[in-house]
Figure 1 (cartoon, helix red, strand yellow):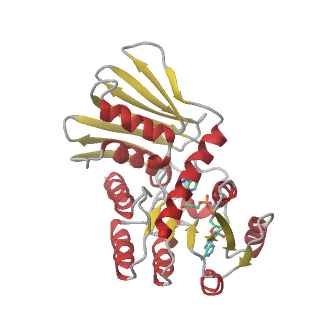
Figure 2: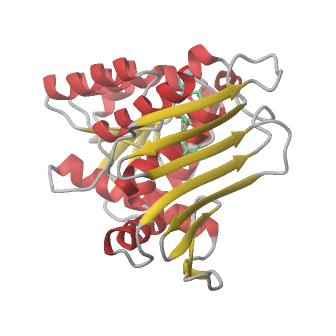
Length: 318
Ligand SMILES: NC(=O)c1ccc[n+]([C@@H]2O[C@H](COP(=O)([O-])OP(=O)(O)OC[C@H]3O[C@@H](n4cnc5c(N)ncnc54)[C@H](O)[C@@H]3O)[C@@H](O)[C@H]2O)c1
């Protein structure tokens, strides 16, 4: 049985908890949060030990692996601390606040001979995997362009640290745009040759970007653009991929639909959204278990997480 420790018992930790509960061969042995009640609430129903100091948890429980579900500014230091304890990590996305921090994490992984993975999901998702095959096999011809539109009320009902650049690294682009950059890099396997962007803060009092629009030039005349807006909006999340002989669409980040030669869109991956998300998360944990055991795996690598940060840095520095 692989024993996993959870550090940070906030909103998204429950999605990890659900995935781990639905798998054989692993369990959450302990949870740590600065706020004891949050850790205790998380531990309900799974018999996990509760801690407010993650170091004490690492030392007493010696978990086989840990998941970091923390504010972004803590990703670097706590990942490195776990690696020092020789405990493999899944650190939630985005990997860290800067490429410099990513480099320090990668160096620590080598120094302490302990692997870690980053919580990007494109490589685990059925939609991502199916679309990558469509691109590779040219089922819809050559991929020429892609775009994502994502809008939401970013500044409503969000833990405060997300809205402070020092703690989060950025706003809607850093947080939600990271998912799109993950998709672009996973699907194309190339680095952007040129990046231009315009960002603004929608006149909110917070110091993180509320809107970002950008264009990435990829090799071979392929482009990837995006429009992210966290100003008051009805909410939209759609990624469209334009090919020479058709179109593909990832809807709400989960479903995959394709249109061949201008025909109606047909479903490729559809279903209950909670189930699709749980499938992506269980794949992540399955690959993490292989990483812990030293087996061959396709866990999202730190190098991929760093590439995402490198693109985000350039978009946000414009
Ligand atoms: N992969 C995805 O689809 C996805 C979705 C949502 C969030 N996320 C990521 O998950 C992470 C957490 O997001 P969230 O929405 O759960 O945030 P959150 O604010 O709800 O949770 C963070 C938790 O960390 C705790 N914490 C802070 N400092 C701590 C410390 N030193 N030790 C232990 N606990 C500490 C806080 O008390 C809080 O409970 C972020 O990296 C976010 O980007 C990923």
